[in-house]
Length: 88
Image 1: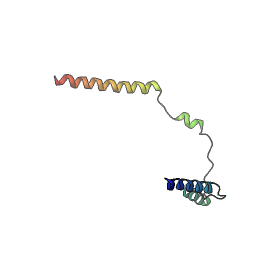
Image 2: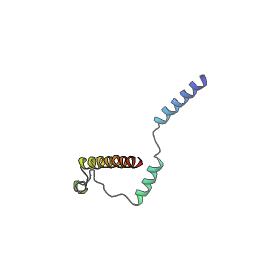
Image 3: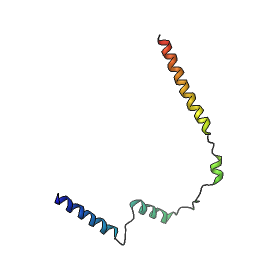
Image 4: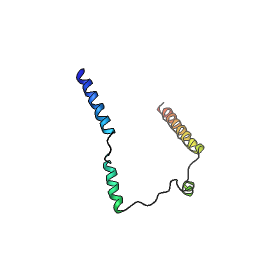
């Protein structure tokens, strides 16, 4: 057990040492994007989506989706009843 406590203390020390570092190396993805953007910077991106783009999408209302699901359940029940009726 004392060996385990020593490992925990060592790991805690390492974490404190790493967190207190002045310079932190960026991730591989951050380095890759920085290199790519140096040659070809990305264009401006709006903070919010264009409201016309959202309005153009066709969405089914909740009751239509509910009717479709209930219709499928009813069809399965009828099909199972028909199969059960034919077996007798």
